[in-house]
Image (cartoon, rainbow, N blue to C red; front, top):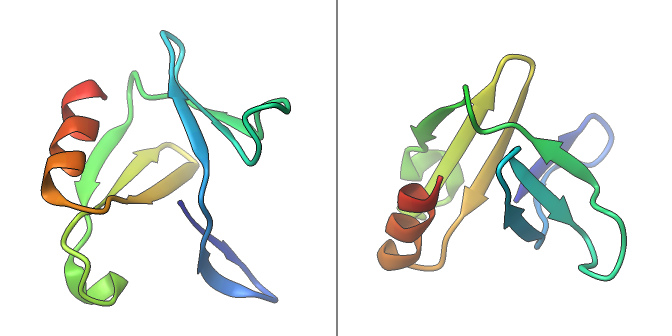
Length: 86
């Protein structure tokens, strides 16, 4: 998952993600409470152009009203599976 802050800039962070009936729960540590819930019911799935993420063709963004989250997959099969499940 890619995050952005004013002081640090943009960086990728590995997260454990669970798709539930209410949205995506994502965790820094699966043994701790979730960091956030991302609603997927009314979100838009956007394919990210490789030039925006240093050539990786397996990147997509979920956009929901005031929040968005970007995911980078390791290969096309993983990307297809994510998109199918969401």
